[in-house]
Length: 608
Image 1 (cartoon, rainbow, N blue to C red):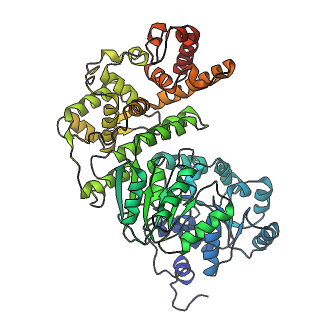
Image 2 (image 1 turned 180 degrees about the horizontal axis):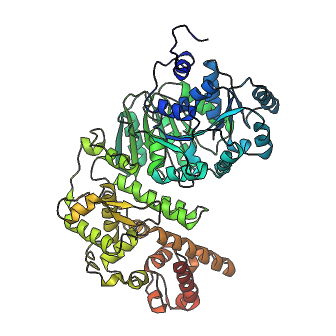
């Protein structure tokens, strides 16, 4: 197979003879060399930058058997098919194959015929499989989509946690972990869980300059979707929706308006998903309307746009999802709609997740970072890249660079916010800082002595949500930072200190979202005023309400309406007099339910 004119360097010989490339892409060679030297490596590279070659090349150079852990059957099958076409002996053992096929694949791997064996983590991490593999000459273990191992990542899968045992079961075998999506907290978590902190970390630039970034407030989402898609006639694209129902509704709407579109979500049967995915991969100009169940491992190079009809879960998830566009390097566009109802829904999703309070707190912080991106007063790409720790200049290829919005000078307000952060010790989150600014006399502020700060009440003239937006924009613009890895405390950056000293100005983007409908607007505004702790308390109050409703055999709203509970969570009354001021609390309900709900509020406060 080796040609006479092949380079002498074994890795370059494999690169050229097997894969047909003359040179490595940025970052690939460094990752390959780290593995060939016998060291562990965590590689974070943008989607489409060739992560797979980082472990495929050393696997062929070293010989023996390489185990590749992959989260999706479709992803395994695609990579195995591509390797076989390149003349590489690759196999997969997975649940979609007949047992006899899996047995034969194992026999070929055990006999030394196979170079790369792909498996899901659940199958790999059984005692029987580990015992069998320990008898074979394993030269390398590669873990694809490694962010799945971190509970702070955008696609956490509990079954990935077991992979932390690999360094004990296979001592001396290098492990390569690869992902396109990991902020600093996620990277640190992967490094600790998988490698005990002993790993060479290779983080390439996150920038995808060919993707135009745009964000638009949501008004009439169907009209906005159709208008966008019609601007990309005959182009392949992905439309992400939050629910299965909306996915099908959007696909039907596009088809009815002459767009070649199909739906994809986890509620469809396997055959239906495969038919629609194959159509998307093979038919030109196809638009796939999908939930996040679609996308990981989809290697279609000519996707020209990604449209978010609903707010994604975090900036990591957003980055991963838009990374499916423009993988051929050609022009592409990522367009997002966001609305108040989206924000409320995302907060509810976080709170209802079966996870600890620490994870919920971090996810609320991540959502705040995403909202800062949506409300951005400056270049979106700068904000997105800064989130991943990469400084950059204005990109010239986002809506705010191409069509700058009107901004207001809010330098004095910003200094008040920074003063509140500084004087309270740079250890509290946005909700507490806003309470200081607005002069809230709640127990947390008073017990910390923050009602005595000079800045206490200095921002009482502005609404809570306006301050929340301002703080998000201060974070997005680099004046403040959030300790996502800790307890979400706000800290002042060097740029923020320059602002405090009069060497910087802060320009604020006024309210982006308009409230739709007076009554609905008030309820959404109440939800939007909530911090992560407020939302957590609201969930506890709802649980109490449900229990009381079941005991009395009445609908839950008869006890208290959602609006009453939201008001309760925001006010956090400490006694009967304050409880009586809650919206919807009359004398009878005060007598019957007051003590129970006050106890629930007090118990929740003591656990936070």
